Image 1 (cartoon, rainbow, N blue to C red):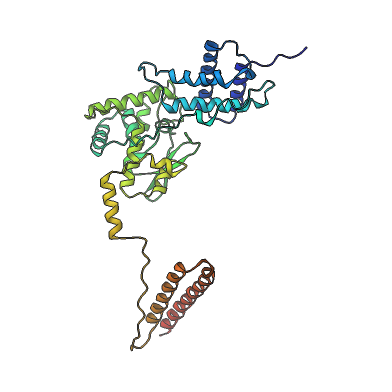
Image 2 (image 1 turned 180 degrees about the horizontal axis):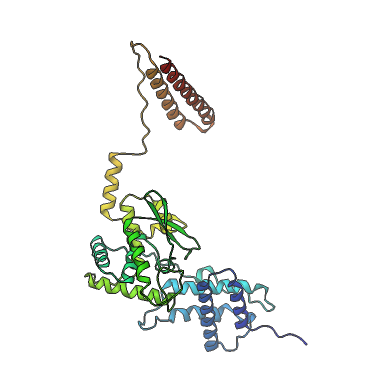
Length: 383
């Protein structure tokens, strides 16, 4: 008896099940939602399509593009964001590629790279210094658990999901007065250490105490979640809107803006871009640049600082002049140091073919200077 080919719906569900072994649970949920959306579209528009080989770019996939464009956000009537539509298209393209080993595979070229819309270039959304100060003042004034959790998020630059996933022993003592907050594995499958000050240590201790007054939940987390992680994040977002309104902020803000504000304030304080990238847990500096806002005042300050103290200039060597004084150890070392600097300047300006011999000569001169320093120190000790 000949086995019937597998249906398109079951084939897509099986590929999602295969991806579940390597992807995070939240990503698998997105794939399942995309499959449900695609199957719903086919049942409404093309009920006869039941196998992968029956799919055609025109009209099935092109109609799917229009179907996504017609979708509206529930309750607002606005179309889906570009990132939402692009996410569905990318996931379906990945599933189609996984169907190549199917007994009845789909035709190649169903989806093209041009079908995926380009993501919008969104500007950073940090709070203004005035709104940031008002918000932190209001959060410090309150003593409830969610307000302290939001203040911890602002002072450490964590994502809202990372704040919800903090463990009871997230605070670690490194050495002396150095403390760090252990941020668990989150969105990018990485964990990191964030240096903290005394205020953060006090907030963590306060959260440990307030957690004992809340309903029971998983014991390993710092914040209680008796109704689950998503409900905890919803409570944090609602509390932020409440605190913002109480502090006089009229604009609607979300927890991720606290992360943008943290990044912008650290950059203005002088933190380098590579260090800021590590603090935020980004994989590339391009992502970090999307989080910071450079104002005209920042540009003016950096410009005047660079013109007054240019860091790219090489220190000039000490002038070597004829002297009638009696030579001594300090003068010999000073002249030798000047010669090394001058030779290094010549090496930097020389052609590539002469670079290696000059580097070898520089190393030999540096070793000679080190030996002279040792000999002169021994000679002075004998005196």
